[in-house]
Image (cartoon, rainbow, N blue to C red; front, side, top):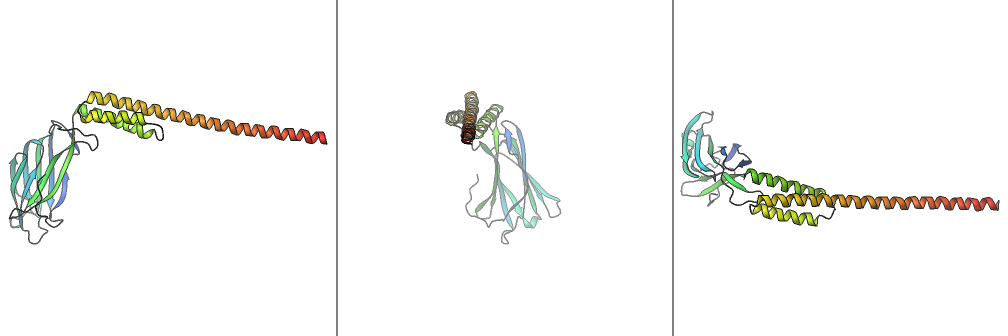
Length: 247
């Protein structure tokens, strides 16, 4: 991320719109864009320089300038994961700036289950004359491979099963799930999948066992109630018989 040296008053630049994906497969081609407006909210800031950064690979940037009517004023292109030197000036009639970046989703350097691993799609920075700068914003996206996505689905399923077990004893299932997460984050997807499936099985068995125990408790309680009713009835009959004999 670009460093912030001196903060510009909040709201100096606003994000009018953005087209930023939430996730992308490793190796896929991506195009994302962000449109900035309210470019000169600080009355003393009539011009500044826009810079950008991304972790996409084989990158091309396009910076397009628009006036108040929406007509294109100018356009610039840059290559590489970083660009700088895009001038934004009120004297040029610029009212909005659209920044678009196209590139390839990078490989995952380190897997993480929660939070899920991500990479920087686009980070924009505003620099004033003299070198002071301020981060405008940074957008990230989850990146994955088909194998890692399939393994994550199994981890999610196991976690859901553990949560659904409620008050059941899911200690063994949770331990197995923790082992599955550790394997996933180590890139051992086959092992992680097997451990996740085992954790799900253990959670379902724990839930079933808990439900069976609960039913037995209910059944035992029901038998006690029936016994009390029957006992009470027999006692009443015995009292009636005694009364009849006395009569």
